[in-house]
Structure formats: structure tokens, C-alpha cells
Length: 166
Image (tube, rainbow, N blue to C red; front, side, top):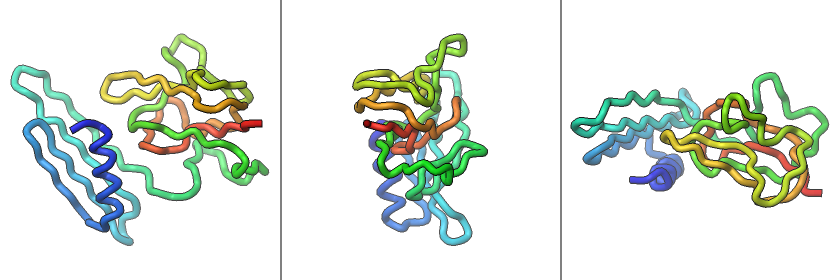
């Protein structure tokens, strides 16, 4: 089962209204839990069963972001800064992983607020299962807001950047 299939399974379970789904296959187990009124959001645990001879790895469960219409805000920021976000393009995460603003600790950040970007420019990298995936811009414009802190976990389809296309 690949990452895309897991993401689709999570979406399906969330929409179905089921409170818990467990899936066990030869080399992994997945448990997806959705809560009622007492537990908002959804929690997903993926446990990789090590193959014989391979070193065991511990996967720390992380609660999923609750689904909402407002983009997540970095700590200390609020949406009421007089910014009309409806006219901006939102660049979203294509995968689940860890968001990084630069390719290495000693390298400069890919983009800052105010950076001019064009189609194909690398905006960030997202680490997923020890692979660093460069996220490229599909739009032309200016970065208005960076919505995620460096080295933070991100979910599929989570907003990362606001871009002014004008």
C-alpha cells in the first residue's frame, strides 16, 4: 500500500462516519480513529512491522489536523491582520511529512515573505519516509504569507503558502 492509497483511505473513513477502522496486511498495520463530540478531528496510527533482518523502527503517532475552512496559523499569528486572503492563491502540501524551508541547516531558505516566484521554483522540501521531496511552485507571483513553521509536520492538502498572483 503506497502513501496515496493511505491518504485516500483516511479521507474515505473520515467521510463515512465510522469511528474506527483497523487494517492489517503482511508488512504493516493501520488504525484510523475518528471521534465524536468528545474527540474532535481524526487520529491515524501507522505501524510498520519490520521484516526479518531489518532494524526495527518506531513510528510515533501524530494526531491529524482537524478539517476546517481556515488555514492553520503558525504560533502567535492570527487571521485578522487586515490581509484579504480571498484574492491570494493557496499552495497546499501534496503529501504528508515534515515541512522544511531550506535544503540543509547551513543553506539559505528557499523563499521568504516578499519573494518573487515563478513556475518551477522550489518553495520548500517535505520529508516523507526519509525521502526529501522538493515542492515546486505551479504559479507566478509574490509570497505573501508562510503558513507553516520550519520543521513542522504537515498533512496532505494542508495550506503552506499564500501567493499574490498580481
